[in-house]
Length: 81
Image (cartoon, rainbow, N blue to C red; front, side, top):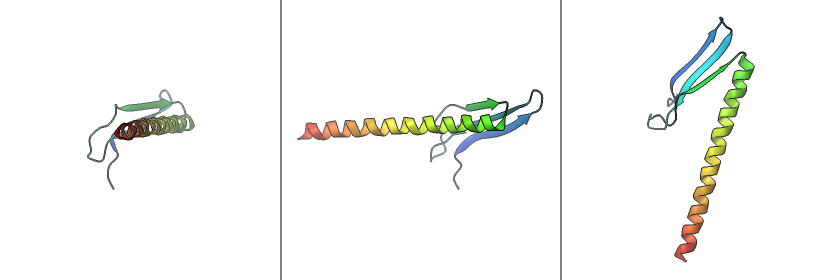
């Protein structure tokens, strides 16, 4: 299985009590595709909610890019006619 993250780390610090997750996403060639993501919270539930929000925002960004690409392709096709 291909690695999808660079520098993935999870730690639990007791003083003060907090959960910390850091990672950097990689493309299929192993190159980084974004800045280091740092999530921190006082509970595991909140950390998981933050992770879900990150995923949701990334999926929305991809959807916007796909829509813009389809609009550009339609415009180029129309210009050819």
